[in-house]
Amino acid sequence: MVVEKIEQLLNEALRRAREQGELPEGPTPESTVQPPPSLNLGDYASNLALALGSQTGQAAREVAQVLLRHMPQAPDLVERVELAGAGFINFRLRPGWLHEAVLEACRLGERCGRSDRYAGHKVNIEFVSANPSGPILVVNGRAAAMGGALANLLEFVGWQVTREYYVNDALVSTQMERLGESLEARYFQALGIDKAVPEDGYQGEYLVAFAQEIVRERGDAYLKMGDDERRRQFTTLALEKMLADQKRDLEDFGVRYEVWFRESSLYDSRKVEKAIGLLTERGYTYESEGALWLRSTALGAEKDEVLVRGTGKPAYLAGDIAYHMDKFGRGFDRLIDIWGPDHHGHVARLKAGVRASGCDADRLEILVHQIVRLVSEGEQVRMSKRAGDIVPLSDLVREVGSDAARFFFLMRSHDTPLDFDLELAKRHSLDNPVYYVQYAHARICSIFAEAERKGVPLPAPESADLSCLTSQDERALMRKIADFPDEVMAAAEKHEPHRLTRFAQEFAEVFHKFYTNCRVLGSGPGMEPARLLLAQAARNVLRNVLGLTGISAPERM
Image 1 (cartoon, one colour):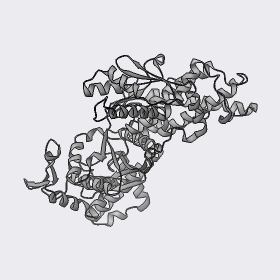
Image 2 (cartoon, rainbow, N blue to C red):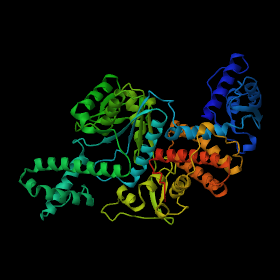
Image 3 (cartoon, helix red, strand yellow):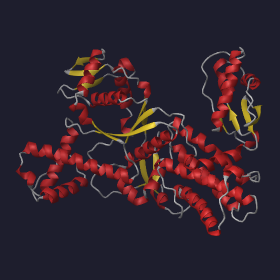
Image 4 (tube, rainbow, N blue to C red):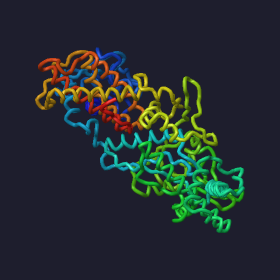
């Protein structure tokens, strides 16, 4: 990765300058290495000198000059290093670096862009975790696309990833009781018996379908049970059928989990009780108004929170603290939770509870994604004809397809609201961004299909000469190929999978220009094999970036 190599040169220059006493000791500030606004200024530029100057009060240009004096030589990569502007350090790389990037992408194939930087580290990513009281909704689809892509990214750079779904199935939950009562009412109705769904129950049509399934399977067998036993049975039935539907919808969306963790197991194993006891032992609880409270204000939260209600039932927070203690106990180096927009206020509460338990809250990262609004021609639309104000993810997938849904969910950073344009997502035209990207991959594949028909062999990277690739379109495509490993690492380390769709669109745009302006087959001796290798590298990059997002890379469209 070129950026990593340049960062190593800068860090070594800084180390040497500090060792010689020319720059003061201290923490190394955050800085960037990225292409400058104009490639006439060089291939990469660093703002390290500006960041150091801001930290120490020195003039950035003076800091940059010190760093330049101590910059190690890297003749295999760097042609020269220059001072520019207010203190930027610009790197001009030797001419063949792009050729090497292309050949490396050809050699690596499916491993193009991969890294082992985080090998040996374990991360748990818990995402979606929708309540089992209804179907997976469109807003959950955003979490599914984001979590799935982030998990793929982290695996790609070496992490050992566990994808986890937290099932809120504790039978102490009023929600679960209401779900069971609602299904019971639908069951009676399916048998022709008048019974109303509770006012605070669930009105969704999915329970009607569940009740009809139960009648087909068991007839009126449940009518012979006592009321309490029947409700317990229907609570369990509702949960299992809802979970089966959720699993199916997520799998249809291309998301699978290694672990489905049940909240009820925390109560069955008394882990919630033990967690509350530990918090009390550590002095972080007190009793007031008949309830047990967490002293969360002592740990950074704005107010204290109830752990155990006056009824004796633990609050949701107690179970959540016990759950995260369990996850830490499973040996993960890092925990990542992806939550919906209605959970923003719970972040500080949970972080406080984790700290109170003695676990390292800095190893827990909580990403809260924002709302999704379905629009068509700028106007908000409703797709679902089902009862209740819900739009199931399965309806969206049927409407636009899994690929388009995933791509559109990943087109914006998770912390910004998303307008999902239904009409655009359905179009089979180049103004649809996912079609535009997939069409670029199909175009590349068409080159190799035609080469096979004509008996044109694919040249070996080991004997390639790419020096003839000098046009603007060729260099632009080589540059994007070279950028891919660094883009993957940045997206993984910053936990920003939306960078993948942006890169894919930029890459497709560059390739389409190359395809239009640069003939591959029949372009002449020397040029044809060079352009074939360039196309092969482009195919590997585009296939891999689509694979990371969970989107297919079609060979024909």
